[in-house]
Image 1 (tube, rainbow, N blue to C red):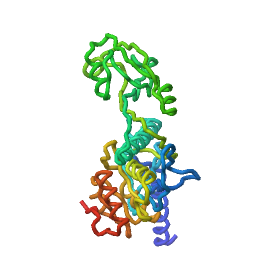
Image 2 (cartoon, one colour):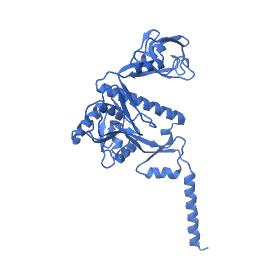
Image 3 (cartoon, rainbow, N blue to C red):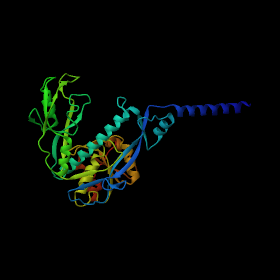
Image 4 (cartoon, helix red, strand yellow):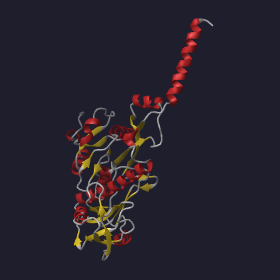
Length: 362
């Protein structure tokens, strides 16, 4: 065989071997890419995303799209070729696997956490929107979670409304922790609670849930500092004067809060917040209307522009990163609160886009 032919054959075989190895080698990375965007004012899979009963609503035009990021599964391990391709592509991001799926949590725990964060974001969006409109929102303290194997397991349940501890009324979740830790480990604490089911049924009927019942729980010592604990996490819960239903499956995390809050405000307000414009965005929100940062901002701006968005409401803390690579034709609008977002929409529908607070690269 001529030397030249032998050299080419050897090189080709080596290249094939390297490519095969690259396909077989698994690397500890995950990929993020643009996910679906959904108009909070419209329908998804044939159902309204936002539906409100018991209050007059309006049918706005335009778009207030929430945005998502698509990620590889917890059990999927990229090969080297996929990782290199992802690093080179403009519409994906390759990140260490543990950023999306921490080693100390199972895939199921990650899914549960994302679902819980999404549910909480919807609750905060409702609270922020109604408070913005001057509509009263009721607040109460509930059992947010019960520690498995703790003293309260089987005695208190998630969703139980806590009226009092040792006869002292509670108004905030911190009150529960304070009153429990006034005890020594091994002492009894008496919780006055309304069972979750009864509280839920009463809320649906617009009635008061009635008197609570006393439940006694014996404290134990916390592992870290020995203080008295009963193995529950108290948290806030809200009651609304009418029903707000948000239907959106297969979405997790807290980042849609801002756009849902705007959708609720738009549905309850005569006229259009957007003036018919296509606005997308992202951002967490709390009950006071403060907007917080999110992950995957670059993937969300791409998804929004691909869908047709002209403006993207961007959390102030994400502005610097988002502005480094802005999809052509998309204006990044900086927001830090729900009020900021509403002011920006007022300028958009009024044609005063030159006055919009824009993101600058950081």
